[in-house]
Image 1 (cartoon, rainbow, N blue to C red):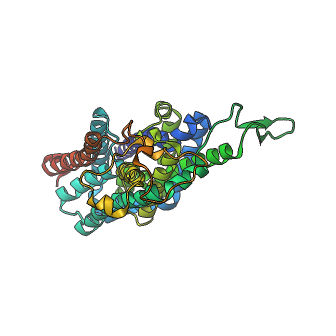
Image 2: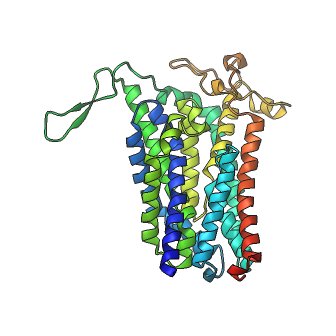
Image 3: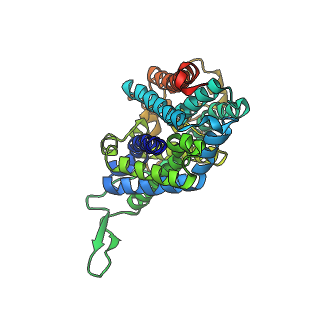
Length: 392
């Protein structure tokens, strides 16, 4: 019976990892696929490789935090309770999908494990408090870093990385030798090549960041139970993520996966860089991070900073309503134009159509990002507390 339960637990964990691969490949490599820089199979392969690297290196820190440090008695992680925790993670994520909101797997996993710890009276409130504090602080950091970039550096950055595709293919493959050798096509310009390399590199960074944080959401309960060792757990999880990237991620790649990939290329690079860097930093500390919330606040900060370029700092502070924040505001700078100093630019030079973020939609995303983990926490607590089979 124990062997059957372990097999069932591994399968459930791999199912969670499978969905992680399907949902995170689009945001990571959507811009690269949309720009015809790489194909979908190449994107899936890169996702699998860099997710596994992130999981194998820094990801084990987060697995340890969730699997052994969040509760003071790891004996509470029986096979039955581990499978139940993974079940609540899956159900809560399903609720987010029904509402069309990409729920945070990290926050949901922490919520389910916290519900188990509360029911058993073994939740480490100090560790839980540390995680919650970083959940609050990290989006604020993302907002302000992106705001500064948007206000002072975005225009120049746009000149460097804005990519215009040429008429021909990006690369030619020389098959005259034993080993095919890719060569730059004659119509490919330097800006196009640099932009392509940049957007693919950013996708790899996002895949790595996802591995550092998200592997714990699938395998931490089983590792905490002591029934599955860290290394095989990461291998199983990484394999399932790769399968998800090659299968269900194809649709998310077609639609660019998430709101982040609907941004201009330069803005997508900034948001992905800031968000991924913060997630990797938190993973090094063993903190499970919500990429979606950090990215959302980074988008808002970047747009706000770009839209306030025509205003001096005192004018921004004194403004009652604040400037409009739009996609066009992020992409308004034309290559080769001399930029006026901060506060002297004509506000009319930043068009207003196409809102970057809808306040109602943003509020719904943030709300559901908290409601979904709350469902996992409440469901886990009530089940482990009052269902006799668990004996808490």
